[in-house]
Length: 389
Image 1 (cartoon, rainbow, N blue to C red):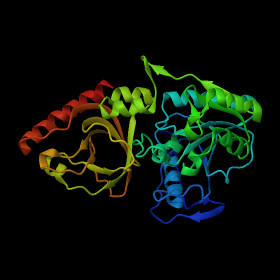
Image 2: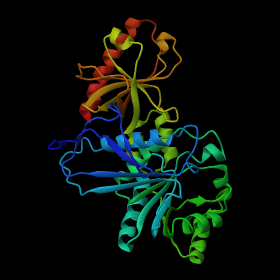
Image 3: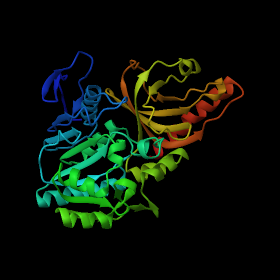
């Protein structure tokens, strides 16, 4: 790959202090030659609390995710990138900013089109390019339950950072925030806290209480408060409007190839390798079992052609997502058989499963022998799908 070994990290800066990392928390990875990434994490406990959010754990997980994301990019020569992540408004420094706001779930092609325009215009005007996103989906407050996520906050920050933006500010969407009028939000947050000079939004965007802050209203507020509003048209692909909700629908229907086109990349399940029942090995198809975040959207149950990435490298894989109906189980499992892999992967290892092609839906077999025969056919189908690209 032409890269060099990075030494294991021993500490990182968090909330202004140097924090040591215990042995085993990080691991050496291959980094692209000439690529460096400095992560500055700042936090506001009051604005970013929640039962499912632990600042130190998320900061560490994000740091490791950022480093792992460097692996596998061959022949890249990138200048140093400074990634600035702020949790809460109080921690964000004073800058004149070009801002966009949203969940950005999936960071799909539509999001990327808007973000690229924002970045380009920010550079022309010498403004800090800033994404304001949310720790929790707004629907978890406005109309629970929230939809399952295409990207959790960790993965979303990673993807946003890769685009070259100057900052990502993460807010906890609260009931109090949901009741702010559009004028209040513009005056107190965008202008008062973030010194917004340029606001980029989608053509169907709205903010504030009861979504009163439509694009036309925001333009009016901008004239009064000193910021410009630029509305970006929606992106369509093969006649379909690119949106997070459309991608969720495709995934639930098992149309992984179409979903990947709208995402602009393979749909990924990132998880931790955990102990399984060992049944796959007994059947002749050893697998790794992944524990994925409960808020992550799982696509249609069945067999997929995919690829698994761990620190040692990437392997083509036959993946299964489902409830193992042949064995009358109810717990959902995510597992993958790595093609050509003869080693062992320790429990607790971080792994990413990319889903590339849907092979068949989940089904119950009358006998274990019938299941084994089908698994052999599935493996052949997976290999053919992967060869076809």
